[in-house]
Length: 516
Ligand code: KIV
Ligand code: ZN
Image (cartoon, rainbow, N blue to C red; front, side, top):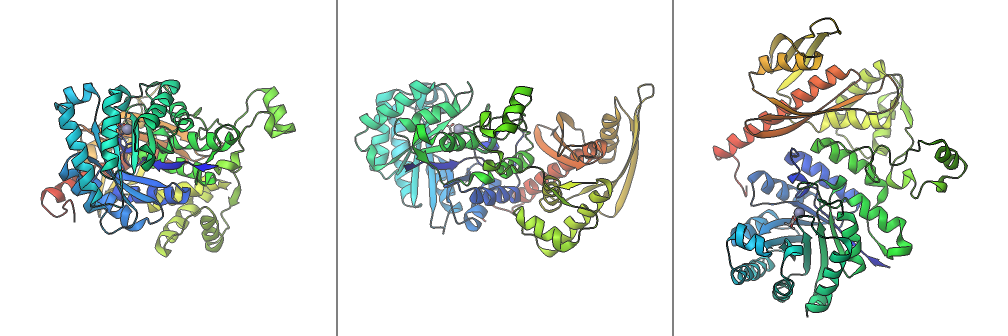
Protein backbone atom coordinates (compact mmCIF):
# COMPACT_ATOMS: atom_id res chain seq x y z
CA UNK A 1 0.00 0.00 0.00
CA UNK A 2 1.24 3.50 -0.82
CA UNK A 3 1.15 6.41 1.62
CA UNK A 4 -0.91 9.52 1.02
CA UNK A 5 0.76 12.66 2.33
CA UNK A 6 -1.56 14.69 4.54
CA UNK A 7 -0.95 18.43 4.19
CA UNK A 8 -2.91 20.38 6.78
CA UNK A 9 -3.88 23.97 5.98
CA UNK A 10 -6.08 24.70 9.03
CA UNK A 11 -3.74 27.50 10.08
CA UNK A 12 -3.59 29.10 6.62
CA UNK A 13 -6.63 28.49 4.40
CA UNK A 14 -8.59 27.45 7.52
CA UNK A 15 -7.92 30.79 9.14
CA UNK A 16 -9.41 32.46 6.06
CA UNK A 17 -12.88 31.31 7.29
CA UNK A 18 -14.98 34.38 8.02
CA UNK A 19 -14.58 35.29 11.69
CA UNK A 20 -11.85 32.76 12.42
CA UNK A 21 -8.65 34.19 13.71
CA UNK A 22 -6.13 32.54 15.94
CA UNK A 23 -3.66 34.33 18.16
CA UNK A 24 -0.01 33.33 17.76
CA UNK A 25 -0.24 31.27 20.97
CA UNK A 26 -3.37 29.52 19.73
CA UNK A 27 -1.72 28.71 16.41
CA UNK A 28 1.13 27.10 18.25
CA UNK A 29 -1.32 25.07 20.30
CA UNK A 30 -3.09 23.86 17.14
CA UNK A 31 0.25 23.08 15.46
CA UNK A 32 1.33 20.97 18.44
CA UNK A 33 -1.94 19.06 18.28
CA UNK A 34 -1.53 18.57 14.51
CA UNK A 35 1.89 17.11 15.19
CA UNK A 36 0.30 14.68 17.66
CA UNK A 37 -2.32 13.87 15.07
CA UNK A 38 0.50 12.83 12.76
CA UNK A 39 0.01 15.11 9.74
CA UNK A 40 2.95 15.19 7.34
CA UNK A 41 2.92 18.91 6.51
CA UNK A 42 1.59 21.90 8.45
CA UNK A 43 0.94 25.00 6.37
CA UNK A 44 1.48 27.42 9.23
CA UNK A 45 0.50 30.64 7.47
CA UNK A 46 1.22 33.23 4.82
CA UNK A 47 4.24 35.13 6.20
CA UNK A 48 4.08 38.11 3.83
CA UNK A 49 0.40 38.76 4.55
CA UNK A 50 0.88 40.22 8.05
CA UNK A 51 3.42 40.41 10.80
CA UNK A 52 1.12 38.23 12.96
CA UNK A 53 1.26 35.50 10.34
CA UNK A 54 5.00 35.91 10.00
CA UNK A 55 5.43 35.55 13.76
CA UNK A 56 3.17 32.49 13.89
CA UNK A 57 5.01 30.67 11.08
CA UNK A 58 8.34 31.50 12.68
CA UNK A 59 7.25 30.29 16.13
CA UNK A 60 5.76 27.08 14.78
CA UNK A 61 8.87 26.41 12.69
CA UNK A 62 11.04 26.76 15.79
CA UNK A 63 8.84 24.75 18.14
CA UNK A 64 7.26 21.99 16.07
CA UNK A 65 9.91 19.74 14.59
CA UNK A 66 8.05 16.58 13.50
CA UNK A 67 6.10 17.61 10.37
CA UNK A 68 7.36 19.69 7.46
CA UNK A 69 6.45 23.34 8.07
CA UNK A 70 5.19 25.22 5.03
CA UNK A 71 4.73 28.94 4.43
CA UNK A 72 2.64 30.34 1.57
CA UNK A 73 4.01 32.92 -0.89
CA UNK A 74 2.65 34.65 -3.97
CA UNK A 75 4.92 34.28 -6.97
CA UNK A 76 6.78 37.47 -6.10
CA UNK A 77 10.26 37.76 -4.64
CA UNK A 78 9.27 39.71 -1.53
CA UNK A 79 6.75 37.00 -0.53
CA UNK A 80 9.27 34.23 -1.13
CA UNK A 81 11.80 36.10 1.00
CA UNK A 82 9.31 36.62 3.83
CA UNK A 83 8.48 32.89 3.81
CA UNK A 84 12.18 32.05 3.70
CA UNK A 85 12.88 34.28 6.68
CA UNK A 86 10.04 32.82 8.72
CA UNK A 87 11.27 29.28 8.01
CA UNK A 88 14.96 30.10 8.42
CA UNK A 89 17.12 27.58 10.21
CA UNK A 90 14.82 24.56 10.15
CA UNK A 91 15.54 21.32 8.36
CA UNK A 92 12.10 20.45 7.05
CA UNK A 93 10.86 23.64 5.41
CA UNK A 94 8.64 24.14 2.41
CA UNK A 95 7.83 27.32 0.51
CA UNK A 96 4.47 27.07 -1.20
CA UNK A 97 4.42 29.39 -4.21
CA UNK A 98 1.15 30.14 -5.99
CA UNK A 99 -0.10 32.21 -8.90
CA UNK A 100 -3.44 32.34 -10.72
CA UNK A 101 -3.31 30.56 -14.09
CA UNK A 102 -6.92 30.69 -15.31
CA UNK A 103 -7.87 33.29 -17.94
CA UNK A 104 -10.27 34.83 -15.39
CA UNK A 105 -7.55 35.24 -12.75
CA UNK A 106 -4.82 36.36 -15.14
CA UNK A 107 -7.00 38.90 -16.89
CA UNK A 108 -9.07 40.33 -14.05
CA UNK A 109 -7.05 39.81 -10.91
CA UNK A 110 -3.41 39.79 -11.94
CA UNK A 111 -3.89 41.87 -15.12
CA UNK A 112 -0.99 39.99 -16.69
CA UNK A 113 -0.50 38.00 -19.85
CA UNK A 114 0.02 34.21 -19.69
CA UNK A 115 3.69 34.77 -20.64
CA UNK A 116 4.16 37.15 -17.72
CA UNK A 117 2.49 34.72 -15.32
CA UNK A 118 4.68 31.92 -16.64
CA UNK A 119 7.80 33.98 -15.93
CA UNK A 120 6.59 34.94 -12.46
CA UNK A 121 6.06 31.26 -11.56
CA UNK A 122 9.43 30.13 -12.87
CA UNK A 123 11.36 32.95 -11.17
CA UNK A 124 9.59 32.55 -7.83
CA UNK A 125 10.15 28.78 -7.76
CA UNK A 126 13.80 29.24 -8.68
CA UNK A 127 14.21 31.76 -5.85
CA UNK A 128 12.34 29.59 -3.34
CA UNK A 129 14.54 26.64 -4.19
CA UNK A 130 17.51 28.57 -2.83
CA UNK A 131 15.83 29.08 0.53
CA UNK A 132 13.88 25.97 1.56
CA UNK A 133 14.41 22.25 1.53
CA UNK A 134 11.23 21.78 -0.51
CA UNK A 135 9.23 23.91 -2.92
CA UNK A 136 5.58 23.42 -3.77
CA UNK A 137 3.89 25.18 -6.66
CA UNK A 138 0.15 25.83 -7.08
CA UNK A 139 -1.45 27.12 -10.28
CA UNK A 140 -4.40 28.81 -8.59
CA UNK A 141 -7.81 28.18 -10.17
CA UNK A 142 -6.30 25.20 -12.02
CA UNK A 143 -9.70 23.69 -12.75
CA UNK A 144 -10.67 26.74 -14.84
CA UNK A 145 -7.27 27.05 -16.51
CA UNK A 146 -6.33 26.16 -20.05
CA UNK A 147 -4.96 22.62 -19.86
CA UNK A 148 -2.07 23.14 -22.28
CA UNK A 149 -0.95 26.24 -20.41
CA UNK A 150 -1.16 24.23 -17.18
CA UNK A 151 1.03 21.43 -18.55
CA UNK A 152 3.65 23.93 -19.75
CA UNK A 153 3.86 25.88 -16.53
CA UNK A 154 4.01 22.67 -14.46
CA UNK A 155 6.81 21.26 -16.59
CA UNK A 156 8.77 24.50 -16.25
CA UNK A 157 8.46 24.78 -12.47
CA UNK A 158 9.38 21.12 -11.96
CA UNK A 159 12.48 21.79 -14.02
CA UNK A 160 13.31 24.67 -11.65
CA UNK A 161 13.04 22.40 -8.63
CA UNK A 162 9.39 22.30 -7.50
CA UNK A 163 9.10 18.88 -5.84
CA UNK A 164 5.37 19.16 -5.18
CA UNK A 165 2.81 20.21 -7.76
CA UNK A 166 -0.49 21.14 -6.17
CA UNK A 167 -3.65 21.32 -8.26
CA UNK A 168 -6.21 23.59 -6.58
CA UNK A 169 -9.90 23.56 -7.32
CA UNK A 170 -9.88 27.07 -5.90
CA UNK A 171 -13.56 27.85 -6.37
CA UNK A 172 -14.93 24.34 -5.77
CA UNK A 173 -16.10 24.13 -9.37
CA UNK A 174 -15.00 20.65 -10.42
CA UNK A 175 -16.75 17.30 -10.11
CA UNK A 176 -15.15 14.00 -9.04
CA UNK A 177 -14.95 12.47 -12.51
CA UNK A 178 -13.74 15.64 -14.17
CA UNK A 179 -11.16 16.36 -11.46
CA UNK A 180 -9.85 12.78 -11.56
CA UNK A 181 -9.46 13.13 -15.36
CA UNK A 182 -7.55 16.39 -14.95
CA UNK A 183 -5.09 14.69 -12.58
CA UNK A 184 -4.82 11.71 -14.95
CA UNK A 185 -4.12 14.06 -17.89
CA UNK A 186 -1.44 15.92 -15.91
CA UNK A 187 0.21 12.57 -15.11
CA UNK A 188 0.28 11.76 -18.82
CA UNK A 189 0.96 15.10 -20.46
CA UNK A 190 3.59 16.71 -18.22
CA UNK A 191 6.80 14.98 -19.31
CA UNK A 192 8.74 15.35 -16.03
CA UNK A 193 5.79 14.81 -13.67
CA UNK A 194 7.44 11.72 -12.14
CA UNK A 195 10.01 14.06 -10.55
CA UNK A 196 7.28 15.64 -8.41
CA UNK A 197 4.56 14.58 -6.00
CA UNK A 198 1.12 15.58 -7.26
CA UNK A 199 -1.09 17.18 -4.64
CA UNK A 200 -4.71 18.35 -4.63
CA UNK A 201 -6.40 21.24 -2.83
CA UNK A 202 -10.18 21.24 -3.13
CA UNK A 203 -12.80 23.70 -1.95
CA UNK A 204 -16.28 22.67 -0.96
CA UNK A 205 -18.50 25.22 -2.70
CA UNK A 206 -20.61 22.47 -4.26
CA UNK A 207 -20.06 19.97 -1.44
CA UNK A 208 -17.66 17.86 -3.53
CA UNK A 209 -14.26 18.58 -1.94
CA UNK A 210 -13.88 15.16 -0.30
CA UNK A 211 -15.12 13.27 -3.36
CA UNK A 212 -12.85 15.31 -5.66
CA UNK A 213 -9.79 14.70 -3.47
CA UNK A 214 -10.44 10.96 -3.28
CA UNK A 215 -11.06 10.75 -7.00
CA UNK A 216 -7.73 12.51 -7.59
CA UNK A 217 -5.72 9.98 -5.62
CA UNK A 218 -7.26 7.20 -7.70
CA UNK A 219 -5.76 8.99 -10.71
CA UNK A 220 -2.24 9.62 -9.45
CA UNK A 221 -2.27 12.34 -6.75
CA UNK A 222 -0.34 11.43 -3.59
CA UNK A 223 -0.86 14.45 -1.35
CA UNK A 224 -4.17 15.82 -0.10
CA UNK A 225 -4.44 19.34 1.27
CA UNK A 226 -7.14 19.56 3.90
CA UNK A 227 -8.19 21.28 7.12
CA UNK A 228 -9.67 20.21 10.42
CA UNK A 229 -13.48 20.36 10.32
CA UNK A 230 -13.12 21.53 6.70
CA UNK A 231 -12.70 25.17 7.72
CA UNK A 232 -11.40 27.54 5.08
CA UNK A 233 -12.26 30.18 2.51
CA UNK A 234 -16.04 30.38 1.83
CA UNK A 235 -17.52 26.86 2.11
CA UNK A 236 -14.14 25.62 3.26
CA UNK A 237 -11.57 23.00 2.31
CA UNK A 238 -11.58 19.23 2.18
CA UNK A 239 -12.09 18.10 5.79
CA UNK A 240 -9.04 16.15 6.99
CA UNK A 241 -11.13 13.80 9.11
CA UNK A 242 -13.25 12.80 6.10
CA UNK A 243 -10.45 11.87 3.70
CA UNK A 244 -8.40 10.16 6.41
CA UNK A 245 -11.30 8.08 7.68
CA UNK A 246 -12.45 7.28 4.14
CA UNK A 247 -8.97 5.97 3.30
CA UNK A 248 -8.88 3.95 6.49
CA UNK A 249 -12.44 2.61 6.38
CA UNK A 250 -12.29 1.81 2.65
CA UNK A 251 -8.70 0.68 2.28
CA UNK A 252 -10.17 -2.31 0.41
CA UNK A 253 -11.25 0.17 -2.29
CA UNK A 254 -8.53 2.83 -2.23
CA UNK A 255 -5.51 0.77 -1.19
CA UNK A 256 -3.68 3.67 0.49
CA UNK A 257 -2.74 4.57 4.04
CA UNK A 258 -1.88 7.79 5.90
CA UNK A 259 0.34 8.49 8.90
CA UNK A 260 -2.53 10.06 10.84
CA UNK A 261 -3.20 8.76 14.36
CA UNK A 262 -6.95 8.73 13.95
CA UNK A 263 -7.55 8.50 17.71
CA UNK A 264 -6.49 12.17 17.91
CA UNK A 265 -9.10 13.32 15.38
CA UNK A 266 -11.91 14.15 17.78
CA UNK A 267 -9.67 16.05 20.19
CA UNK A 268 -8.19 18.04 17.31
CA UNK A 269 -11.63 18.81 15.92
CA UNK A 270 -12.83 20.15 19.27
CA UNK A 271 -9.71 22.24 19.78
CA UNK A 272 -9.96 23.87 16.36
CA UNK A 273 -13.69 24.47 16.74
CA UNK A 274 -13.14 26.16 20.08
CA UNK A 275 -10.20 28.30 19.11
CA UNK A 276 -11.62 29.30 15.73
CA UNK A 277 -15.03 29.95 17.29
CA UNK A 278 -16.70 27.86 14.60
CA UNK A 279 -19.12 25.23 15.92
CA UNK A 280 -19.21 21.86 14.15
CA UNK A 281 -22.61 21.13 12.64
CA UNK A 282 -24.25 18.17 14.46
CA UNK A 283 -24.58 16.03 11.32
CA UNK A 284 -21.00 16.68 10.16
CA UNK A 285 -19.37 13.49 8.87
CA UNK A 286 -16.99 11.83 11.35
CA UNK A 287 -16.79 14.58 14.01
CA UNK A 288 -20.38 15.89 14.30
CA UNK A 289 -22.24 15.31 17.56
CA UNK A 290 -24.61 12.92 15.80
CA UNK A 291 -22.03 11.04 13.75
CA UNK A 292 -22.21 8.02 16.07
CA UNK A 293 -25.72 8.48 17.47
CA UNK A 294 -28.48 6.08 16.51
CA UNK A 295 -32.01 7.41 16.78
CA UNK A 296 -34.40 4.92 15.26
CA UNK A 297 -35.44 1.86 17.26
CA UNK A 298 -34.34 -0.50 14.50
CA UNK A 299 -30.88 1.05 14.39
CA UNK A 300 -30.49 1.08 18.18
CA UNK A 301 -31.57 -2.52 18.37
CA UNK A 302 -29.09 -3.49 15.63
CA UNK A 303 -26.15 -1.65 17.23
CA UNK A 304 -26.84 -3.21 20.64
CA UNK A 305 -26.79 -6.66 19.05
CA UNK A 306 -23.76 -6.04 16.87
CA UNK A 307 -22.21 -2.59 16.35
CA UNK A 308 -21.22 -3.23 12.72
CA UNK A 309 -24.90 -3.44 11.71
CA UNK A 310 -25.04 0.35 11.51
CA UNK A 311 -21.51 1.54 12.31
CA UNK A 312 -18.80 1.52 9.66
CA UNK A 313 -16.25 3.06 12.05
CA UNK A 314 -16.03 2.82 15.83
CA UNK A 315 -16.27 5.99 17.95
CA UNK A 316 -12.99 4.99 19.60
CA UNK A 317 -11.19 5.00 16.22
CA UNK A 318 -11.48 8.82 16.23
CA UNK A 319 -10.80 9.06 19.96
CA UNK A 320 -14.39 9.50 20.99
CA UNK A 321 -14.59 7.61 24.26
CA UNK A 322 -17.82 7.01 26.12
CA UNK A 323 -18.14 10.02 28.49
CA UNK A 324 -16.13 8.59 31.33
CA UNK A 325 -16.97 9.65 34.88
CA UNK A 326 -13.63 10.84 36.10
CA UNK A 327 -13.32 12.91 39.19
CA UNK A 328 -15.44 14.23 41.98
CA UNK A 329 -15.20 17.08 44.44
CA UNK A 330 -13.07 14.97 46.79
CA UNK A 331 -10.43 14.16 44.17
CA UNK A 332 -6.95 15.47 44.85
CA UNK A 333 -4.29 17.19 42.79
CA UNK A 334 -2.45 13.98 42.01
CA UNK A 335 -5.47 12.27 40.46
CA UNK A 336 -6.28 15.49 38.63
CA UNK A 337 -2.79 15.78 37.14
CA UNK A 338 -2.78 12.09 36.13
CA UNK A 339 -6.16 12.42 34.44
CA UNK A 340 -5.00 15.49 32.51
CA UNK A 341 -1.86 13.62 31.43
CA UNK A 342 -4.04 10.87 30.03
CA UNK A 343 -5.99 13.53 28.14
CA UNK A 344 -2.74 14.83 26.66
CA UNK A 345 -2.13 17.93 28.82
CA UNK A 346 1.24 18.58 30.43
CA UNK A 347 0.75 21.66 32.57
CA UNK A 348 3.21 23.86 34.39
CA UNK A 349 2.67 23.90 38.19
CA UNK A 350 1.08 27.34 38.12
CA UNK A 351 -1.30 26.33 35.30
CA UNK A 352 -2.19 23.13 37.10
CA UNK A 353 -3.03 25.08 40.23
CA UNK A 354 -5.35 27.44 38.32
CA UNK A 355 -7.04 24.57 36.49
CA UNK A 356 -7.38 22.60 39.73
CA UNK A 357 -9.14 25.48 41.45
CA UNK A 358 -11.52 25.81 38.50
CA UNK A 359 -12.19 22.07 38.63
CA UNK A 360 -13.03 22.19 42.35
CA UNK A 361 -15.41 25.06 41.72
CA UNK A 362 -17.11 23.10 38.96
CA UNK A 363 -17.25 19.91 41.03
CA UNK A 364 -19.13 21.84 43.73
CA UNK A 365 -21.79 22.78 41.19
CA UNK A 366 -21.85 19.64 39.10
CA UNK A 367 -22.19 16.15 40.52
CA UNK A 368 -20.34 14.39 37.72
CA UNK A 369 -17.26 15.79 36.03
CA UNK A 370 -16.44 14.20 32.66
CA UNK A 371 -13.31 14.23 30.51
CA UNK A 372 -14.82 16.80 28.20
CA UNK A 373 -15.50 19.13 31.14
CA UNK A 374 -11.85 18.86 32.13
CA UNK A 375 -10.67 19.67 28.62
CA UNK A 376 -12.81 22.81 28.71
CA UNK A 377 -11.49 23.89 32.08
CA UNK A 378 -7.88 23.43 31.06
CA UNK A 379 -8.26 25.19 27.76
CA UNK A 380 -10.19 28.03 29.30
CA UNK A 381 -7.64 28.52 32.06
CA UNK A 382 -4.39 27.98 30.21
CA UNK A 383 -4.90 29.10 26.62
CA UNK A 384 -6.52 32.42 27.15
CA UNK A 385 -5.43 35.72 25.81
CA UNK A 386 -4.86 38.36 28.54
CA UNK A 387 -8.04 38.99 30.53
CA UNK A 388 -8.22 42.79 30.49
CA UNK A 389 -11.89 42.70 31.45
CA UNK A 390 -12.85 40.04 33.93
CA UNK A 391 -16.41 39.16 34.96
CA UNK A 392 -16.77 39.60 38.69
CA UNK A 393 -20.52 39.43 39.20
CA UNK A 394 -23.69 39.12 37.17
CA UNK A 395 -27.29 39.29 38.30
CA UNK A 396 -30.24 39.11 35.95
CA UNK A 397 -33.97 39.40 36.46
CA UNK A 398 -36.20 38.03 33.75
CA UNK A 399 -39.63 36.58 33.06
CA UNK A 400 -42.35 36.68 30.43
CA UNK A 401 -44.19 39.57 32.12
CA UNK A 402 -41.33 41.85 33.16
CA UNK A 403 -38.65 43.82 31.42
CA UNK A 404 -35.44 41.74 31.61
CA UNK A 405 -32.63 43.55 33.41
CA UNK A 406 -29.02 42.76 34.17
CA UNK A 407 -26.51 44.14 36.64
CA UNK A 408 -22.92 43.42 35.73
CA UNK A 409 -19.74 44.06 37.69
CA UNK A 410 -16.45 43.88 35.83
CA UNK A 411 -12.84 44.16 36.93
CA UNK A 412 -10.27 45.92 34.81
CA UNK A 413 -6.84 45.79 36.39
CA UNK A 414 -7.54 46.85 40.00
CA UNK A 415 -10.62 48.89 39.20
CA UNK A 416 -14.20 47.67 39.53
CA UNK A 417 -17.02 48.93 37.29
CA UNK A 418 -20.72 48.27 37.65
CA UNK A 419 -23.62 48.98 35.32
CA UNK A 420 -27.22 47.90 34.84
CA UNK A 421 -29.32 47.75 31.68
CA UNK A 422 -32.61 46.40 30.31
CA UNK A 423 -32.86 44.37 27.14
CA UNK A 424 -34.93 42.04 24.99
CA UNK A 425 -33.82 39.20 27.23
CA UNK A 426 -31.34 38.69 30.06
CA UNK A 427 -28.42 38.12 27.67
CA UNK A 428 -29.20 41.21 25.64
CA UNK A 429 -29.49 43.18 28.90
CA UNK A 430 -26.13 41.82 30.11
CA UNK A 431 -24.44 42.71 26.82
CA UNK A 432 -25.85 46.25 26.99
CA UNK A 433 -24.54 46.66 30.54
CA UNK A 434 -21.11 45.44 29.43
CA UNK A 435 -21.16 47.87 26.48
CA UNK A 436 -21.86 50.72 28.91
CA UNK A 437 -18.83 49.76 30.96
CA UNK A 438 -16.40 49.30 28.07
CA UNK A 439 -17.75 52.17 25.97
CA UNK A 440 -17.28 50.05 22.85
CA UNK A 441 -19.81 50.03 20.01
CA UNK A 442 -20.13 46.37 19.19
CA UNK A 443 -22.40 44.37 16.91
CA UNK A 444 -23.23 40.82 17.84
CA UNK A 445 -22.82 39.00 14.53
CA UNK A 446 -23.42 35.46 15.78
CA UNK A 447 -24.32 33.60 18.95
CA UNK A 448 -24.43 29.85 19.55
CA UNK A 449 -24.95 27.71 22.61
CA UNK A 450 -24.34 24.01 23.15
CA UNK A 451 -24.03 21.74 26.12
CA UNK A 452 -20.63 20.17 26.65
CA UNK A 453 -21.90 16.94 28.20
CA UNK A 454 -25.36 15.53 28.91
CA UNK A 455 -27.57 16.19 31.93
CA UNK A 456 -29.34 19.23 33.34
CA UNK A 457 -26.22 20.33 35.20
CA UNK A 458 -24.02 20.15 32.09
CA UNK A 459 -21.56 22.89 31.22
CA UNK A 460 -22.95 25.25 28.60
CA UNK A 461 -20.54 26.54 25.97
CA UNK A 462 -21.37 29.86 24.30
CA UNK A 463 -19.58 31.06 21.19
CA UNK A 464 -20.09 34.59 19.89
CA UNK A 465 -18.87 36.59 16.95
CA UNK A 466 -18.58 40.30 17.64
CA UNK A 467 -17.81 43.08 15.21
CA UNK A 468 -16.25 46.45 15.86
CA UNK A 469 -15.38 48.82 12.97
CA UNK A 470 -15.10 45.97 10.48
CA UNK A 471 -13.07 43.77 12.84
CA UNK A 472 -14.73 40.42 13.47
CA UNK A 473 -13.59 38.43 16.48
CA UNK A 474 -14.86 35.32 18.22
CA UNK A 475 -15.31 34.75 21.92
CA UNK A 476 -16.05 31.72 24.01
CA UNK A 477 -17.40 31.25 27.51
CA UNK A 478 -18.20 28.18 29.58
CA UNK A 479 -20.29 27.82 32.71
CA UNK A 480 -23.06 25.69 34.18
CA UNK A 481 -25.10 28.92 33.97
CA UNK A 482 -25.76 29.91 30.36
CA UNK A 483 -26.16 33.61 31.16
CA UNK A 484 -22.78 33.65 32.87
CA UNK A 485 -21.31 31.68 29.91
CA UNK A 486 -22.82 34.27 27.54
CA UNK A 487 -21.31 37.18 29.46
CA UNK A 488 -17.92 35.42 29.58
CA UNK A 489 -18.02 34.76 25.83
CA UNK A 490 -18.77 38.43 25.13
CA UNK A 491 -15.93 39.59 27.40
CA UNK A 492 -13.61 37.04 25.82
CA UNK A 493 -14.36 38.56 22.40
CA UNK A 494 -13.72 42.06 23.80
CA UNK A 495 -10.40 40.94 25.30
CA UNK A 496 -9.46 39.50 21.93
CA UNK A 497 -10.28 42.81 20.23
CA UNK A 498 -8.09 44.64 22.72
CA UNK A 499 -5.29 42.11 22.31
CA UNK A 500 -5.43 42.48 18.53
CA UNK A 501 -5.53 46.28 18.77
CA UNK A 502 -2.55 46.37 21.13
CA UNK A 503 -0.48 44.22 18.83
CA UNK A 504 -1.43 46.43 15.93
CA UNK A 505 -0.36 49.53 17.86
CA UNK A 506 2.90 47.93 18.93
CA UNK A 507 3.60 47.09 15.32
CA UNK A 508 2.75 50.60 14.21
CA UNK A 509 5.06 51.95 16.89
CA UNK A 510 7.77 49.62 15.56
CA UNK A 511 7.99 47.49 18.71
CA UNK A 512 7.16 44.30 16.78
CA UNK A 513 8.43 43.97 13.28
CA UNK A 514 7.80 41.38 10.64
CA UNK A 515 10.95 39.38 10.81
CA UNK A 516 11.77 40.05 14.43
O1 KIV B 1 -7.57 27.64 -3.08
C1 KIV B 1 -6.45 27.91 -3.51
O2 KIV B 1 -6.20 27.97 -4.73
C2 KIV B 1 -5.40 28.17 -2.54
C3 KIV B 1 -4.01 28.27 -3.09
C4 KIV B 1 -3.22 29.31 -2.41
C5 KIV B 1 -3.37 26.91 -3.02
O3 KIV B 1 -5.64 28.23 -1.37
ZN1 ZN C 1 -7.62 27.31 -0.94
